[in-house]
Image (cartoon, rainbow over all chains, first blue to last red; front, top):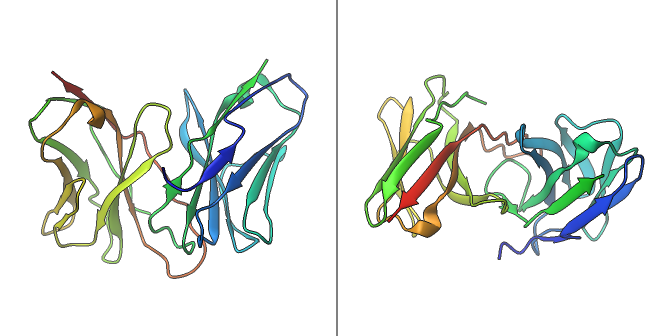
Length: 113
Length: 113
């Protein structure tokens, strides 16, 4: 158990819909990272937050947004969903945000039908 | 971050040592070598990291060549539960708060009876 909690574990929705994925970091970790993993793309970095502020951005689509709240939990919002958005979405956390040891959650499996 | 090259797949007999190589010929002096693994559809798991000295922990050993252009992750007594994709990542552990930790395609290690 990494200490990072992601909910829900599974999510099935339809094209055009909007969903919210939630992540609770390990106690004491200030930074949260979001990754997308699809079969043909591997693990893709989406975005990083540190203590409530966005710090680094990867290949995150404009239809996707995220935020980190004062209690340090984070939410990833995916809108206007397409079939290609079906993937595993992982959240990770770390004590600071400099790329040291990351602890990953067990992921949210999103299926867009 | 420096580019890394890993073999796409390797096999190892259970109980034997698994030696996973990684080439990082463009590594710079302040970049660390990190290893993570991902067991089927689970979140990636941190294994070990090092700068230039060899490192050992309860999971594995990391051997970095003197010129730091390559490294080897050693699982001393591989078990079936070590079957996973192993990622070698080279980066600077920034003291700041921004990081784009990027995963490549990794090595798929298959441990067999």
